[in-house]
Length: 615
Image (tube, rainbow, N blue to C red):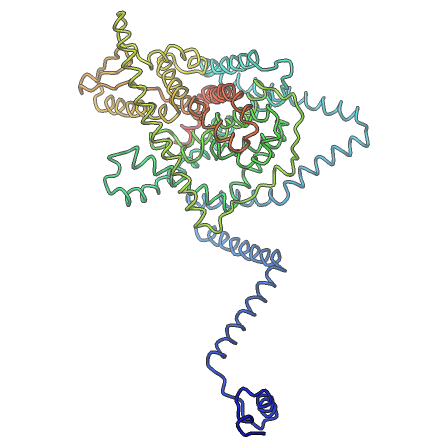
């Protein structure tokens, strides 16, 4: 065999022989390259990652359970030491309230479903043991017993607390009766009205009013919540000042009011990501469903409307909208019209509206919306949705808190733009309408004919039956007109002007004890000694409170288009039904707000008493 063949490097025989000798130790192996050591290290790290990921996937629930237990134990330790270190100041009570509320939400989330199912099982056992007829008789007797007890409580409490000390406030009760009668007469099907949700919706609203407005601790609690809300909203000034400069408040609406919407929208988005909002809404939804005997979809939406807007809250029940009954759809739309979202609620505070009353209005209007909806559009169909599926709320799909905060701020862009352009457009259109009406009035000898003047007479009866003092009825009627035909933002802006006028008037009378003023025919007040005119005049404190509740809702003509478009996109097959129900639902939403205002007006004497005790 030639030598060149043996020495050929690509000869297979040569390679096999060399490999065998290397394995036997006759020929030393080539030195390991640095790249090989790096590759082995990377493969080792990859193998470790795979093992850890596999173990986490296999024991994910156990891992998170351990993490939650550790966090809970750590927080309990922190809470205990914080109470020991400093107790008695406002900060300690704030920490205690947050802790108790969080514990309740967690415990209800764990065992709330078992409680509800347990009550159903007990009722089912009674049916099997005693028979359906006896159980139905007992159930009907218990229901009527509760009706009588609630009616007696409301009647006696109102007569003792209100009728004796402040009979004028009983006018609000006449308003409640008038609104209910009108909605019943104009109902789609008066013969099919189920009075159970109507009665208990109004009763729960009254109980909320008793707790919030008629007790010292209830009013103090919501006063505290309102102060905390104002404190939280003030943090939005930091971002506005950084972006727009130190003189950002020179342009109040654009650079102070609108940034509040962006900030609060981001905060709400974070709370949704953490699951806090879902937990609260689920609890309130189950409570409303249990008390009013309404379906899970409409109850959950009503609870969501306390915090979210008219097109955001229905997202929780979006999968069920295509199969909902017309009465359920009407209840969903009415709930959206009767409340406002948390994002814009913060903006109203900047105009001097009390935050505690806005919070109370949001809570009280939820059961009122369901009650009025079932009165004006009673249920005549059978719901097809499964209650257990409805309450399976999922958290948002963001990957982390940062993304949730960013998405909330980005989502507010359309809301801010919508608020800004609508306010600009409606104020300009109102000015055009006023100028046109003034011109037409002048042609026939009518001086000062304007849109607010027309509203001050058209809506005067509504203002009067709500319990507004006659001196403020025309002012309140104008605000109702602004809210209904433009939006609640314009109405609160006008109300803010009246509140500012009140501050100026109080300062005027305090500074000059013998000060004089002249009330002009158009309700303006001329301060003689200062030579200043308060355009629109002032509103009494009680009228301001009632107005805050009456205006706290999206029930206006513009919102009809927003709801039809938003809900129609969620359930395209129901667009025709939504269009048909929109006007009736908008009117029902307004009435729900008026009922809340009536109860607030009726509670005014107790409200004044609670305020004095706190002060």
